[in-house]
Length: 519
Image 1 (spheres, helix red, strand yellow):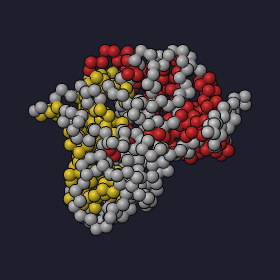
Image 2 (cartoon, one colour; image 1 turned 135 degrees about the vertical axis):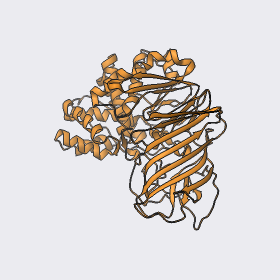
Image 3 (cartoon, one colour; image 1 turned 180 degrees about the vertical axis):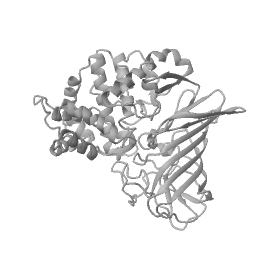
């Protein structure tokens, strides 16, 4: 995710290091643990799920995987292999979609109950392996009780028939984004479960099949490649399937009066863009740049990791861009507002493209590892601006160094970000994980040298492709590639309250946080 300013950028105005700017009505901005058996303390929000209680023996508890920043996300005891999502769009953004979610998973522990993350929808029925199951709500969990307990190592299929409400919850942002002519998704960081039942944590990636039925005249697009288009009467159903596992926060569905533009990328890669039909011509000068940007990223880190790529341009005021897998979400105004310099828009496009390697293909095991996503995307954004537009990387990093102590004071060290304010879940997307984290990568390149750093980048996205990884994994690989002990370096740069001296630039100074005068 990348927050974009609400005020156009003057060509003479320095925009980096970027301080996150928030869209109106939205908190400041955008990572999966596998430790099981840890119970949540208590539900922090009243559940928006309306359920029919079929049976219950003892009160159900909400569970989580114990993520330091989002302890109520995810659920222990199973590993999802695939999701099959079906949505029926009624032709209006004011009514819920009818939906069916089917989850195939392996149990990793004996389960008498199965907790799913789900809120902001009405559950009509639940089946486990084809047999009706009892269900209730607990916090933001949908708690399912199968007819028979599930032993460890068993294969289970859970089918939930439910609604998916595009009208925002009173106290939550995210999930469905209502556009001028339909819907899109923005599920980062913790709101995929406002759209469909899931194990809503990036450590449990899975394959996805997505079906969308909409009235004729609409176009539906989702992650992955199309497999079927079925027209029946006044409605059309589109089916898409991923060829690589995906985190729930990266799911994307677009329904609108849209046109799908197709072109060919490097090595025959299918590139498809989804745009409002009326804006097709004015967006084309931007969209045609994508194949070249993919080639540039491949030169830096290796082959593009997925089956397709493209931009979903939405007529919506989100205040951010989002790296949904294979189909990145962009606000239309980023491309149509004349106040944004061309080099700036180009670099934002590369930021979201870089996430396909860093954050999507290699996903964070916990949300505290977010800096690996955003730091790398910011790094390649800045590097592209340097190579293509002469916006010097060193100048940007020097400016970031000057602000780094302020960022750490406000948001925590890059690898140990502060928890978001209650009710402002995307508050983890602060400057400390953007330019503050890119500054860590610059320091690492200074410390181990450019050749070792470039080998590290390629090895990282190759070794952990389609998987999840941690900060410790990155440091261990950096030590392996460089042949250096980086314990002291990583402790200071990733976890220190103060920014360490910059290797090679002892003259760089960090400006101390401004003291608040006593009243």
